[in-house]
Length: 321
Image (cartoon, rainbow, N blue to C red; front, side):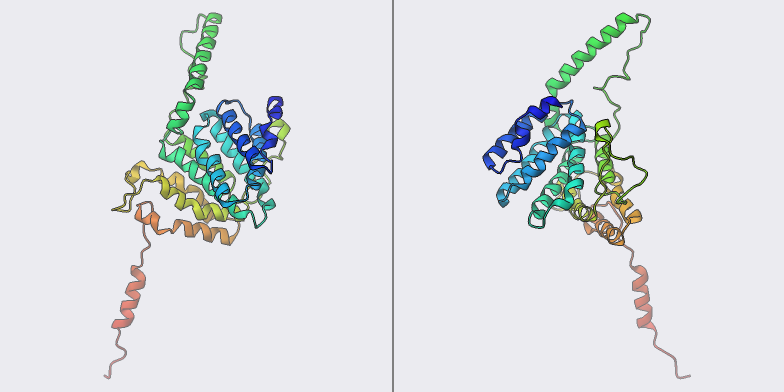
């Protein structure tokens, strides 16, 4: 933490001078790509600076460029060990600072939030089931090689201490996690379910925040943030599904797309949302006609209404007899 506090770009991120901010964001990107040991608390301090860096970006083109640099340019290049913590730090920061965003600056933060929903789909859904992205793997090649060398050295030390152990100690090998399908995507969706898409605004069962001891709960909602995430959910999903222009359906088979994982938090909001407007908005998201067109959901059955209309037209009233 001491080293992070000494880095000049942390305070320069909140500068009112665009040149200084740009230089600071470039330095931050290089710093994040070279570190895999940053804690959530350290990343939260970085995101505090990034939040105000974005706060000072006033012109539309500047805002759009910065939003893209902080999301689609930066996140896919982060080390795999860092990317989930970095995303968590973003959503914690947005949840904490949401009510401090004035109406004149709200649109640009909505753009940043949309970008983070989209980049999550891009690296966890489009790039594959268990890896983040090709660029992430290339960026981390040297880091993984160093980890493998360190792991090999540690194994040699363990084998010298205990010659009777003939089986390799694979359970503690952090470079070879269980290969579960869509595990990274599931972790990202779970993260969103804990925060902006959580049905509750407050959960008394959660522990009290204690950052010094590493207890940093995710803020829930608020409703304004829920509405926006729900509004952009299908739009951002469409961007990564590789829709065929002729059929209007994803080029991949529906069986190869984790539909249940992608729609689970929205369905939960529809069932368990604390406020009725949230449940209605979640229902509208699930009723999007694109989900039916893609084969993700079945269309509504309207046969009963049609049969009632036909019966009313066919009835001719009472006879004269």
